[in-house]
Amino acid sequence: PTPLYLQLAEGLRGLIADGTVRVGEALPSERELSAMTQISRVTVRKAIDALLREGMLSRRPGSGTYVATRIEQPASLLAGFSADMADRGSRPGSLWIEKALGRPTPEEAMTLALSPDAAIVRLARVRTADDEPLAIERAVVPAALLPPVEAIGASLYEALARLGNRPVRGLQRLQSSLATAAEAQLLSIPVGAAILRIERRSFLASGAPVEFTRSAYRGDRFDFVTEVREPGLRPADGGA
Image (cartoon, rainbow, N blue to C red):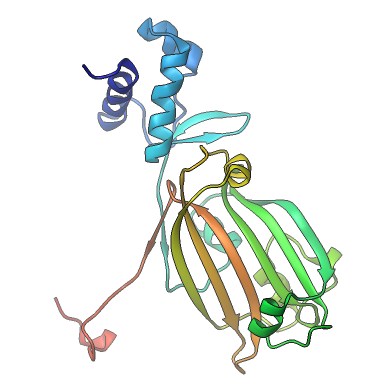
């Protein structure tokens, strides 16, 4: 027989599918669901955890559990997190982990074409939208391209643009992975949940490196999409 928590999870899927609980709305609390279904809170919690792993629900610390929306992010778009979330009508935010001057590692020096004793700025933070943690971002930028560390606000690209150093192109590498215990705690997801790891290197129009960033995005909330076309077909040519 199907375990009781999976039966409950299927019932919750039905409530979402028929619009009883809509995308973006909060799910009743574990206590309320337990009272409504006459099922123990332990079983209710297991059902909710199953739907969290599937990405059907998302948990917001101090707020509750919500029916999740998936964010389609064009993989070919060079845009900062803050601007992208604002364009979607969400309120972007950051929980800072580190914001400090330092020296590059050998890998960072090579990637950013810097000398070993060059000054760099390390920026590590949890990126949020409407107070929901969505990604962990760790960026390394040559200090000469940025205003003073204390003047760097929520948007790295806005800070770069202030000195005329906003990047115009970039290279990204995406890799699927599983959340570590530390990442799970920062992103309010189960340990082992799906993570999209993105390594980005961006450049000025001159070709000079601007940014070396490694990010971990919640796999239950993001889909990265890319346009593909037949080799030799120009965008203006169209095609079916």
